[in-house]
Picture 1 (cartoon, helix red, strand yellow):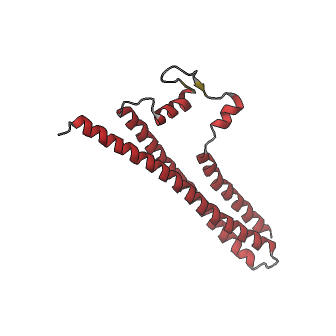
Picture 2 (cartoon, rainbow, N blue to C red; picture 1 turned 135 degrees about the vertical axis):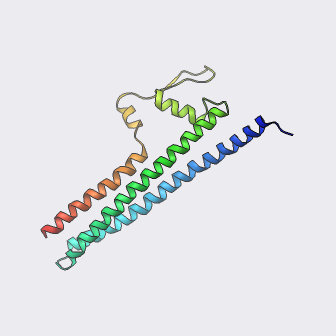
Picture 3 (cartoon, rainbow, N blue to C red; picture 1 turned 90 degrees about the vertical axis):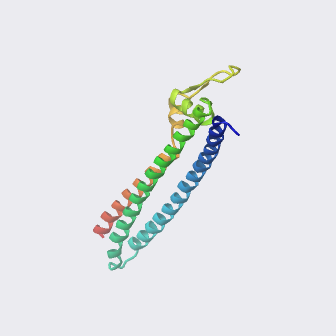
Length: 171
């Protein structure tokens, strides 16, 4: 009969494996949603461009509903991305916690988190010089996250739809 410590450790290892797979799945979900929302917005912007390029004033009546639909899609996109970010942050938090429970405070995920937080990472055996986070412009660029781009795109599309509404009103 196995002791409880071994069983708990085996469960933690399984949880760790599951959490790694969940993180992979989360990244795939974000990419799929981004593709879907980019496609929908591209189609709507194309339709708006066609309406603005035409000479038929009756078609302009479709412009404002299309722009409102685009704004709604962009706001939903922003909400979905925010929820996915929260889910992803939860999984990363859980991964780091499981690493600590497995007595690996400098594991892959805990070590990476410490590096971005403390701007420095020491080697566990002291054989390598510390890894330092870049300073200045390089450091600023290194902090850029794909999630931020995902949050900016819906706002840019929303702004574009608002501009198209004003252009449509003037035509």
